[in-house]
Amino acid sequence: MQRDIFDADHDAFRSLARTFTAKEITPFHDQWERDGQVSRDVWLAAGRAGLLGTDVPEEYGGGGVPDFRYNAVLLEELTRAGATGIGFPLQNDVVAPYLLRLADGDQKKRWLPGFCSGEIITAIAMTEPGAGSDLQGIQTHARREGDDWVLNGSKTFITNGILSDLVIVVARTDPDAGSRGFSLLVVERGMPGFERGRRLEKVGLKAQDTAELSFTDVRVPAANVLGAPGSGFVSLMQNLAQERLSIAVGSVAGAARALELTLDYTKERTAFGRPVANFQNTRFELAEMDTEVTVAQVFVDRCITEHVAGRLTVQDAAKAKWWASDVQKRVVDRCVQLHGGYGYMLEYPIAKAFVDSRVQAIYGGTNEIMKEIIGRALVG
Image 1 (cartoon, rainbow, N blue to C red):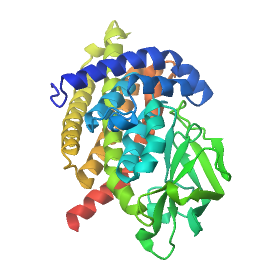
Image 2 (image 1 turned 30 degrees about the vertical axis):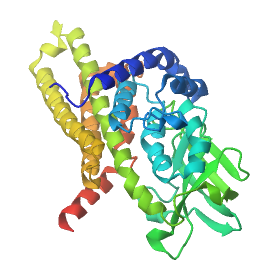
Image 3 (image 1 turned 180 degrees about the vertical axis):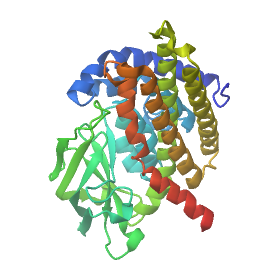
């Protein structure tokens, strides 16, 4: 089914992203997986190519086009190439909205040029050892002392955790104010008391530098608070929809890639004297997966259109994240089965897709939380 949400400019950007990925990412990704993180050079190259901050105003070095479809195109191309270690979507899709909506003029001048050039790599630190999807369980806290906030606590599962130069930290700044007691503090590389723990050993996403972070009496200047103190929880709720839509985009693209790999494999692989694709069971499996991926793509594309128009609801973003990541999980598992024993070998891309895709249903809020969001909206 032909997709109609992109125009000629998006197609040109896709060509740029595909060429960049083939030249700057694919030849090095296996080594990055062994290293546990990507090179900072690829971030600088992405900045030069105009792949970072496409929605950041031109005065700060960005593309000046607030259109999430460009974000979607880049994410689809990275997924198509199996480039799961690249943290560009975290920078563009998750962190950028906080800086664009909440940063004041001075903060934008300080951070956005480097954000767009790739000199500043960003992260957002929400999850803690004892608080994942339940953001109100956050224990990291900060108290005001003069012109600074003194920050203490720890975070875990932080994408770009090792490479990040700028981390938006969600902290409790007023323990008696409930949801109005959270603030967003920007911690920068080199601040005393800010330490990076171990790079976490994950099932998949080996080239993505996911890490533990700790904060011990870190003095964060008041000039590094994003938005008004106490408004952090509201800001999180406003920005999580785009993060979840981004996960949905990547999930559908990942499912489509797994299906494409499997279709090619079953046409080439023979069993009992004929291609595996010629067996009725294989054709039925492929037909079911193709239908699921197509239906998911149509819904996610509609959500992209709604988001660009400023109409995407929290509930629909949750639906997209839950449904698309669940489709990806089912499709990739069935694709491994159709590969037989080779599907379990990491030298085959489908095996890597299997271990890389499992987390989609967990991060950005677990799929169980997505269902709770949808259900509460239905029953009030």
